[in-house]
Length: 130
Image 1 (cartoon, rainbow, N blue to C red):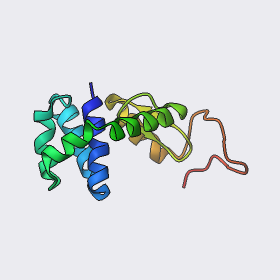
Image 2: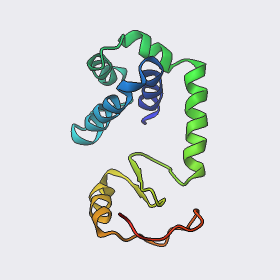
Image 3: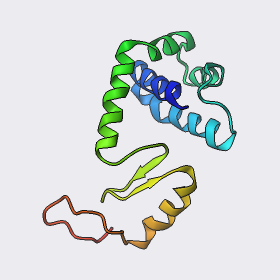
Image 4: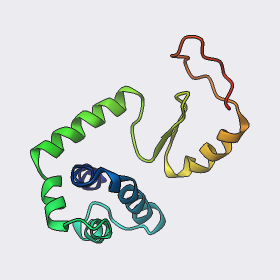
């Protein structure tokens, strides 16, 4: 499961928010490109070190009640908008693309300037993508 990786990402954010995007990219590469087990602290440790963060401190924070509660809140928020897994890409119009196998679909969707039947949640919003 990705639970430890998700908690570790929140811990990285707590230590240095600017390092979160690079850490997340490293985790996704480890999981999806290299087939590594992101539930294993031994997989995450070198990724944390690449961020110039203290590995033991970040992993300890990832196990803390505060980080666990933060992940629960963020998971509830994500579920509230229809996200149920990672990776998920959400367009500015609310179009969801879920799963590693959907990344190509998301990339091909973007330049077309079209969208599927996504409920319009913004008054006065048109369907034109610029």
